[in-house]
Image (cartoon, rainbow, N blue to C red):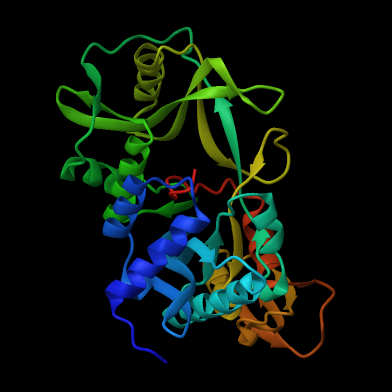
Length: 362
C-alpha cells in the first residue's frame, strides 16, 4: 500500500469530484475544500496510490422529536466511471458506514443527485437507503391586515459576521425534526448561495438583528420542463426570524428587490398527503440497537416490534427487536414486520416534516 500525503489525497479527491460533478464551479470547489473538507472526514478507496472513490462523512446534530442525536451526512460521493463503479461505491459506502458506526452516529443521510442515483442507492450492497424525507415549495403572500413596521430595515448583506452565527445558534434548528448546523457548515452554505447569485437579506429593528433570509431569483419551470425566459419568482431557501411580522416584511421586500410578484419558500413535509411534494433526502439507520434505545428515551410510549435483515455493511444490526415501555429487548423469533436499515429510517422519519435546510446540494 503506497503512503500518500493528505495533500495528495485531497488533490485526487477534488479531481474525482470535478469529473463526477461537471456543473460545480471552481469557486464552489475552492470554498468547499477550504471550509468543509477535512482529511479525517474523507473516506476513500485507493489502489496503487490512486484514489478511485471518495466521500465526505460530515457529522451533524439532528433533532429527532426535539432531542438531539448524532447523524452523518454523505457528501460528494464519487467513484471512477467504468465497469467497476458500483463495486467501488459499495466498498466506499461500507467503509463510510463503519466509520459512522464507530463514531456513534445513529443515522446516515444521503441526498441523491437524480432519480437514477436514488434508485441505485436503495440496493443492499450500497447500504439499503430509503427515501425518508420530502420537501414542498409553498407560495406565500402578505396578509391583508399587514401593517408595516417603520423601525424595521431589511438590507442585502455579504459579510458573514459573528452576529449572524450567534442569531442562528440562538434561534435556529428548533423544529422537532431538524438538522442543526455548526458555524462552518452554516457559513459555507450561505457563501455557496451567494456564489450562485442568491442574496442574503438581514432584518434589523433599531439596529438589532431580528431575522435573516436566503433568497434567489429563479425561472418558473414550464410544462415542457424547460425554464421560462421571462417568468421568475423569488425562491426562499431558508428564513429565520424572531417573530411572524418579520416574515411578512421579508416577503414584501423580496418582491421589491428581486422585481418579482411571486415568492415561495421551501420546507420539509410528511411523505404522504401533499400532492406537490418532492422526495428529498434518503436515510438509513447506522446503529439499530442504539437508535431504538434512543427512541425509547424520547418516546417511552412507543411500541415497536421489528426485524432488520440484509444489512451487509453493519451485520451487527441484523436481528429481531422489541421496543416496549422505553426498553429494547432482543427477540428469538422472526416478527411479521421485517425491514432494511433504510426501511426503518423511512418508517420513523417519513411521516414527519423533516427540515434539512442548507445541505449544499440544492
